[in-house]
Length: 91
Image (cartoon, rainbow, N blue to C red):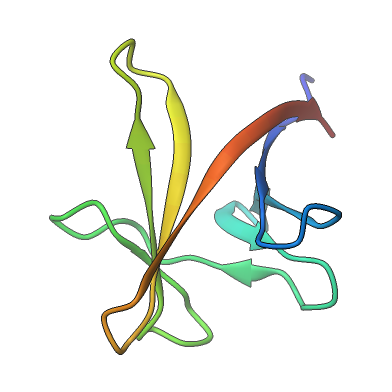
């Protein structure tokens, strides 16, 4: 069986990354120092809301060639943070 591929994204700290992984059959965020954050399936706008806090969402941004090159965190107050994809790894 082929291992799932994790997508790695840079955080505001250049020494810390977060990963998008499959956890218990669901898309999830793996952020150092936090439990795995499972996501609901995307809504009609393509936002994946966190199961633990459904006021926070993630969306994925495609480059012109169709590859996901970044993700955007959407906070309840309307603030967004875009994080660049930096690596693909095999778990």
